[in-house]
Image 1 (cartoon, rainbow, N blue to C red):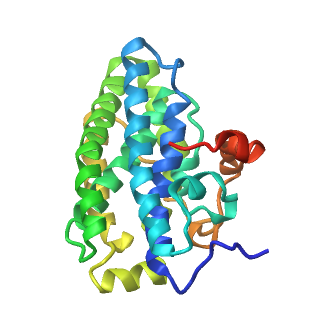
Image 2 (tube, rainbow, N blue to C red; image 1 turned 30 degrees about the vertical axis):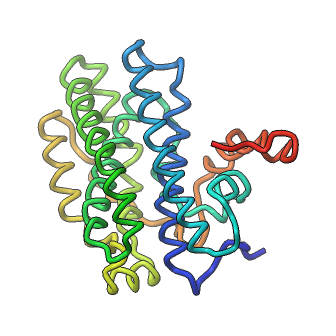
Length: 261
């Protein structure tokens, strides 16, 4: 069945939806560390990362609802869509595994997000600029936090080094998808509204190489490939399990809970 949220004639909706979904799903992954962090300091840090990302998701999804023009709120988009309606990157969906994997995932995505938001400051869409300005302050910290911890873990002990390298080995296969650019995204970029993801790759790799050299780890030799496109509603098996947990109360008791952020 074709998704009711698929709107090929509204690429701005799809683009903003993707921005919000990335933040929402990665924010949920960080919320899973609450009370499970390696120590009290990092437990609090995980809480702050989750709150930052969910706050960004609220802004982007609220705007996506306005762009769609069907009266859907950020809560509707977060809680009442099925897996195929989400537009988040596969990288954001991946399970935590351990702290090393989570740090690698956060570094990979926050470097990407930092560059994407920086370019969005040049957008002709004033709402995107406003949201990007706010989110960029938080993502700047996310990038620094994850880079510092990646180096600290890898240079600290042999076990820390092993876990960081393991995170790279697991997650590097999702790199090509970060830079996949749909026809709608490219059309928006040509109008100076959005950012074409492929334009971010060279700087992303340069930044990642710098951090990995300092940490003493390396990217796998295999570069990975795009297995199926998020732009067409394809995702890893992990997203469905995540949504079952995240959406359960609102789906089970929609009238009784009226859940909102």
